[in-house]
Length: 322
Image (cartoon, rainbow, N blue to C red):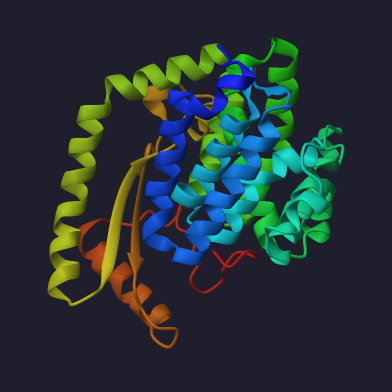
C-alpha cells in the first residue's frame, strides 16, 4: 500500500532502504562522494512530493531499489549510483537539468540524460528487430554506465511486475526477453541475464516456471551435496599447484532448464546438464591462456571429458571476449 506523499520523508520502509543503500556505498565512496549521494537523496525526496506512483508505490522506492542494484549487485561507483537515484525524476519532469546543475557534476547529469533518452525509445517492437534495437541502445549510449543503469532499472521492474495487470506483464516480459536479457549477456552480466530470463518465463509460462522451480527446490539438498563432492578434489589440487583461484558451483537457471527440456523434448529428470562449475583464475595476461590449459588438464585428471560437448573458448573466444 502506497504511503501518503506528505509522509514519505518519515516513512520507515523508505528510511530502512535508504540506510541500506548508505551501508553498501560507504566503504566504497570518498567523503565527498558520500556527501553528494546524500544531496541526491534530498533532491529525490523533494521531487517525490509531487511525483506519480510507479509499480503501485512511490517512485522513491523504485529509485532506491535501482540504486541498490547498481551499488550492491553490479558494483558500480558513486557516479552511477547517484545517476540511478535521480534519473526517474528527470525522466518524468519532476527534476530538470536546471534543478540538477547547481548540485550535481556534469558527468552525472550526462548519464541521467542518457538513461532518460534511451528510456524514451519505443522498444516494444516485433521480436525480429531485437538485435537492431539492442544495437541502437548501445549506439546512443556513449557511456556504458547508461546501459548498466538501464539494465538495473529493468531488473527492478521485473522483480516487481506483480503490481501490474496481466497485459502489461506479458508486454514487458516479452520486451525484456528480446532486448534486455541479451543486452545483459553482452555486458557480461550473466546472473542478471539469467534472472531476467527466469522472470520472463515466470510471467509468460507460469505453470512451467513453477513446476521446474518446485523440482529444483525438492532436489536442492542432493544437488548441493553433489556439487560440493565434485568440487572438493579440484579445490585440493588447485591449492597444491599454487593457483590463485575462485571456484563456484551452481544449478542452471529455471529458464535454461526449460529451454533444454523444449529443445531436447525431455522431462526435467532427463536434462543432461543441470549443473555448472566455474573455476576463475587470477592470472596475468601473459600467462592466463597457459594457466587455463593447465587447469583444464587438472580437471581431466579427475573427470572424463565428453568430446561431443566440449567447446574451446580459450583458443577461439566469443565475440564479447568470453
